[in-house]
Image 1 (cartoon, rainbow, N blue to C red):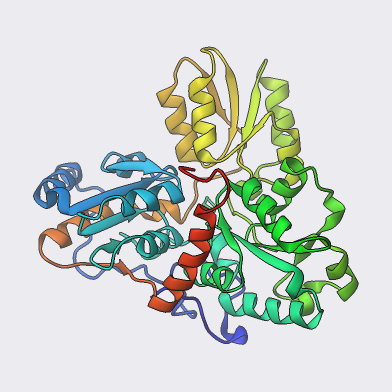
Image 2 (cartoon, rainbow, N blue to C red):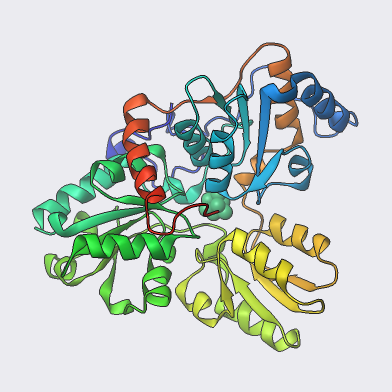
Length: 397
Ligand code: SF4
């Protein structure tokens, strides 16, 4: 199951792994059955054989931040929303094996039919950003906004990188989901809906919310406040809440939040003619210094369209940057920040887990199913459908 619940005192400050049921221990790290050893020289052959045996009954999705060894077996690659839509477009596939993280598999389950089963090869593949907004914290926040007299004028906008429970909250309160591709459109819609003096509660990535408001819509940083879920009233006064236009949840990406101004300046010093391109989950001061800002899909398209010989310093997940460097050898592609690592939870999905999931299906065992509660799925779908109904929202990726 998918919702993260539990009394506030029992919750870890940061739920680092997966579904959030067993808060006292590392979750989802055991695979019942035989997980192949990473050193098994037959892993690639075993993955190919299992894929061939399953044929069109299985559809494998690979997020851009996955390892090469996994991407090799993906039927399609993309960002989270593109992959969920791809899954929904394959109603004949009985099993959707999602090589990504937990919230992505939840979205795929919401958007696919009841006859399809979504499988996450390693249940420990969570997302630290999504885990920074637990549903009881968000409900508490809303109650406090009601108390402060601002909830009525507040529209929630929730990033795709969130649990199904938070998406469902957004649906129940008349908000919308957004992706890093359409955040500007989503925020424009929400601010219009909120009306004069209205507000947006942006969940769970403060950086995407701040960057979209300030950089894309020309808003002032002074209009933004940060809601800290670990402090009463989010650490804010009623006056601060009343004066704010953007109430930003205090969440961030553990990967993109680590890129620094120093790294941008170092790239400019050391790489002649370099263009810096970063993801909007990076901090505002980094985004402000970059030449280009965009989702993973935009980063890929921008680099693919650039003339040969262009030098790039890229601020996004390392697996993708390495793949871009291999794919476009005519360009000079560098990773922006030497102190940033791979996304550790994304990298939980490796070839042994993928082989284990596929071979289990061949043997008739469906493992690591991700199934969202019906009511949660219904409410989350309302918010996802609102996103799809945004102006110009046809095939965003
Ligand atoms: S890169 Fe960041 S947002 Fe994406 S899965 Fe990893 S922690 Fe979550």
